Length: 259
Image (tube, rainbow, N blue to C red):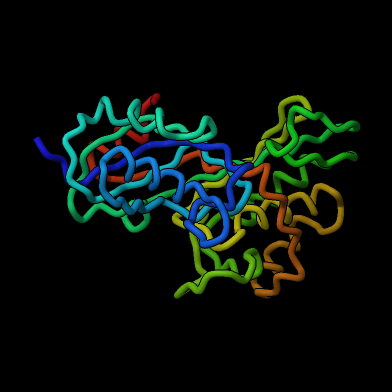
């Protein structure tokens, strides 16, 4: 039996890669995955990923799809691919999808989580895995700041100039900040993200925690549309894609599963 449209669930550590998207002069996750698929299936394969993660950004959950005829059972495809992939990229699952499925355009919600290591001394185990921020932080102010960034807004002030988009309006469903020991976790879910938007949101909440802005200033910052008024774009190593939501079955079940 031949399968034509396939979705993949994968995860990767982005430290060694110049982001997801294939580039001419840099190693990327997309290129590495396409090369492995092309070698496995003995034909050129083009893969569509659910988001253009930047250089150094990680993915605990990531979705991709490709349209090539093959006869490898879906339960065997991850094992066959992982044998051809480096250890920092892992395919967790595979399933058939409809011809009109698209990893980007069919996506209904994405979630990113940013990790901050807030301690007096740097922890080498968090290098390229969390952003080291020394000094005392006001967690109450940081949590309050996040609340001002929820909802539907024009997020022009919280993005870096990069790719062209039709609109800078996005809906942020949740922006939750929690702390356990020295690790602060900032989880953001939205219907889509602008270039560096998640990292700028965390940087702005961090500014509030450091007393550089007040949480209530964020409403005016967003309305101004001025990037220079918001907080910094946080380093990429602390950012992880942690959730992708689809309506179509069986990809919905695959992405929500344990694999």
